[in-house]
Length: 426
Image (cartoon, rainbow, N blue to C red; front, side):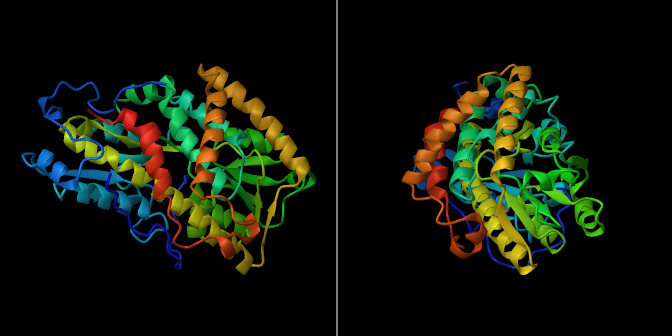
């Protein structure tokens, strides 16, 4: 399968604060159709390994279309922009220019709270969504996101394995797929867990005693419960307000992914990074979903879009992990530190993560999901190692050993072949 991609992460001066980069998150059969009886969804497709000439022939008699895509980035200059630009290029070039992808930056059409409705009614055609923001509407999805906290943690290898496992577990959990279907949405990647969570604090916070009484900004209810268990106070605060809150001392730390904080300049006011070395924090996972217009496209067009999801996955990983290296560099430049949580914190975190994961899954009616995720994680850890993506050093020196031109195309291709291809429209 041909794959098109641009350089995912480039070292550059980061741009303005991202307003809503929160990420940044076995039912056989195929996606697409969305229950539509429209004749426009009919027609012949092409094989997943088709040549470009064969694809061009399959699309020859189809009318050109334009799809509106809301990725996670705030602008074309964002550190996260490749999450939109790479996918646009992959779809447009594979379609021979017959599909135009119109990128809508910064959730300009619909916020994360409204994007499901916008997809269903056709205002947006493809989007990065955050089902974890509404756990009551996506309980099975939320259970998998919470279970992510039980997986091993490392700067590169474990994040790659966890994300691949999340995609697999989501596709293999009928309840997760049903949650999208109930909203008239088509999952293209039903779970993108993105990067693991770290603490970013004004002062170092690695031992259990350091957590007591601290005010920590969190992005999910599950993370808030874990923070509370460690003796700190979770604070619900929108991301754009976090920098000023840290600067004024209203909160002591942010708990979240490093990528949006690189863009926001957080390490100027919170340069001390704490990282998990075993189990971690529940993630606010996302997904790539399609809506009404995609469901009505000819099957060949649906296949072009779906096939680009291997690019979506690999680019997301390049962006997220590349941003970690930048975060480490920025923390050091601002007189900060990068340290793993001490054993007492790690043990308590791991114990509570398991308890919270099991309770959340049972409540959602997917009691076996954490076990399935763990099993998939072990298998993908082996694949990551076989592909040569092991960690080459410690988190604290990530900025020194992580290659700027890192590519996870091979992992994206393997994930597509082993997991995603079975759900390809046909």
